Image 1 (cartoon, rainbow, N blue to C red):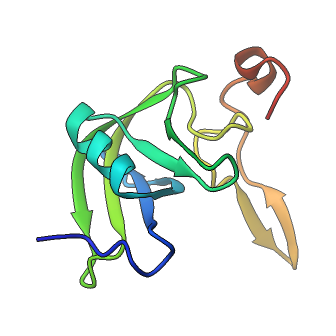
Image 2: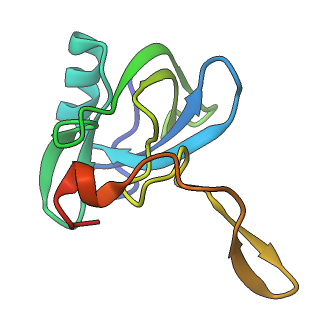
Length: 126
């Protein structure tokens, strides 16, 4: 069974979910090389659309994602990674999940506290 990398200029959406809690942690994109490296290493690797290069989640922060299970959808054009997050958070803004904002009364509000200081981890970049 092959994945279909043809629909988004060679990329697949990769939904990342905590294997224990079921919480969605982030959405990334993978090209074939990122998917291959993820399978080979057991750690989530993505393709950065802004930087135009591969990156292993946690290469800067140390907050890596150990892959426990990989699934694909019915069209084989997206994947779901069930992971164990190794670190206090997945989001580069300092939150456990990248989905830390909730729409309330037409405004986006932060729905949780930061789980780590991104300035201390990334040296002021977020």
